[in-house]
Length: 113
Length: 112
Image (cartoon, one colour):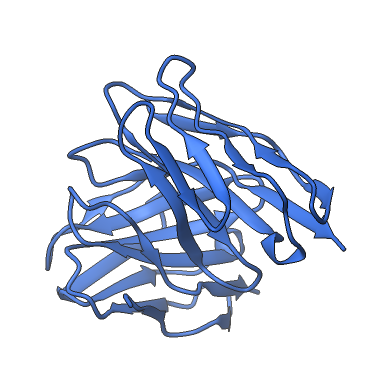
């Protein structure tokens, strides 16, 4: 089974802190994604990556950056956390642009106080 | 642009009732269509998918048919169980692209 693992289930951070969310997949998938999930808004794509060191902005990239130094790891960085970034963050991966089924991690619930 | 619209929830049903969750989409060309399910405290997982018009995806008693003429992919189950309580997301993926577009999700509660 494909496994996508996010480093934390719950995080509480202070406004202005730099926050790192880590995601690792174990099935050699090319594509990795970061979404945030908010009630009534569904999933919104923050950033994605289709190869090592490659990254593309999604629909809501402001206030975030990403890093993909190795194929299996995709990190989301909140440069200066703000209260409006309190949300559930979901990491996902997919094999390729042809095989597009997404496999998700369990999510990280981030609270910024 | 591409988008997915699904019925607002929550949907509350009694055990063994019939379930329909409506989903319509807007997209050019021939996207692949998906239903994902999110159980409490977990990430999303694929429930079923269809890759071309008139395809029927099915899994765990759930079914959905890709209807290009009505741009719809409604989710159905003949007899729901308490364990089906979850949030259901309709999604589309355009062939050759990277992004999957998700609907807002529909929460289902099933009462014993």
